[in-house]
Length: 255
Image (cartoon, rainbow, N blue to C red; front, side, top):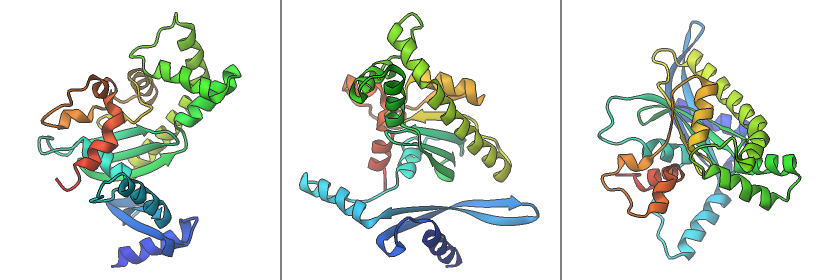
């Protein structure tokens, strides 16, 4: 009850809209030590009810009956956890989306840290467009070609040019993630993060190599299908499995 009151107060202070227009949830991350004090780390999540209604309306118009609503970070972590997962591995998830990247640190299914960084596919497209003086849609197509590649080809002019354009925003994103990791290390003492799982619509194998080099921690390309008993037969779904992380996590809610 006390936590609920504090969450409500924090929401009033932080949300850009009235709290009575929001659906508010929170996650208790666990106890943390600050100087000589032990406190509860709480993650606040909120969404404007109008946004929820629009999403539900789209599903209903498509003839679907929504069964549950979930937050993206919860779905992402769930997509990589199942009954076969040994112990409670402490690992990070970088979910590169269209408008932002979710930085999530979790211990098994329990989320300990969550932050959205304003770096995503849109920002990468803008960087390529500005660097090459191209219309945004052409820059997006060029970047998508490179993103779909398993390896970077230094002899390929398109690859070389796009990577040059993306260097600054990727380094900026990497620096933000590193700050999150430093905060986590100081706040949640004990076992360190074991690895980073890179997922999302903007993830790619060569990006995994970039983050591993910059963050100095083992990184892997996320494949949520590995937690399923049956894999999809369609080749397209398996080409870039990281894109399905949130969707698979949502489908596993309540299972």
